[in-house]
Image 1 (cartoon, rainbow over the protein chains, first blue to last red):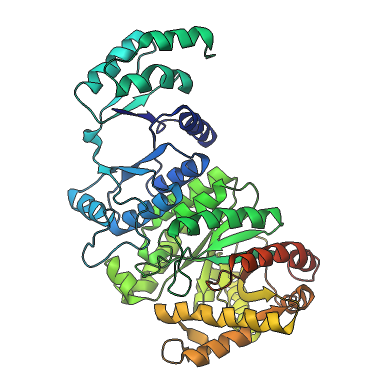
Image 2 (image 1 turned 30 degrees about the horizontal axis):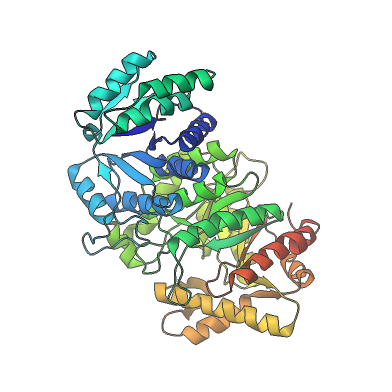
Length: 197
Length: 315
């Protein structure tokens, strides 16, 4: 299971960018961003430029917008992000079908995206496909939440986390990917290299 | 008078193929280079569904360039408004300005390719109505500096009446440019404006700084060849009476005549005759090698910009 840090409720752009950088540095798999309708890929593009490795997951409002416009914006974003784009799509299923088809490099109603996505195919998910949680501050309780979702099994988990990104990475990235995460190592790391909140 | 550069189209053409990843990396690199050399702005251009990947989504591209820089302004020259949902455009423009401390400029145009209207399931015969309704919505919902790309007096008047800036196409003679500016100014004055000063005027110019006749010929060949792209797109410049598709050589001759190629001093003298706030030097051709493009960006910033800033043009 891969962790996606939720930045959708972080109001300050500079703070969003800083958190995305920290997630990038600490090996969080993805960050989730959004914006007012039409601004989603603008926000994602700025985050992509500020980071190098983290996947930029864009929560997009597909209501009352031509699906080709959305696919064009996402494809350009994927070129900017150098294959680090993933989509959460909210909108009509007919639009989602067109967007998914175009972002797979296939034609829809005779149109092929140009430029194409940088990835072979950009993943498009509906919101209900990816669970999301507010991780408890208590590390033991949070670990139980991670374990539960990992064992569902879930491919992704969106987490809201108000504490240090390094702490999130230290305690939960490995736990999310392994059923025998050595918690002792993370606990000892906290003693050797304490994380200042 | 401010000096910008354009038009970044992010293409991979048949003439000069490249990876799109490289094109988008070059965009941010070029914006940083232009910023380091004191250039005011960099402008992007939009088309849809063209084989060479001509950028169909300017707002994410603008966001990347703004995020990679601190001072330079980034503009759309132009975003084809009738092909978008205006409220989404306004939201994106507002976010770009919020994120960049007001360094984003929203240039808007109508487009002319029937296939682009077909792709977006819009009726091209309605494009003027779509444009006017879109401009009103943009004016109401964004504070981003807004420019309207125009090629006719009527279009200039529409922009002037709304208190919006002008972004004048690159292939016009000085006489045509001045006519368009007058139409814009007159319409603005008749609109009983609340602002003290008229909306700004930007001028796109095919331009290259050279030191010799050999370089001059080379630059003019680049300008000519760049219009192959527009011939492919089916472009026609309304006021020149030139059909860019069927009369490609004639078209290139016309474009060459309107190009401004020479030393920085010669170019500054030529630009001094225009009553405009911004000149966008059109250097984003697909033929020049990267080394020539980066050199001309440096020279526009270091040689031309100081000369023009000291000229009689509008400040």
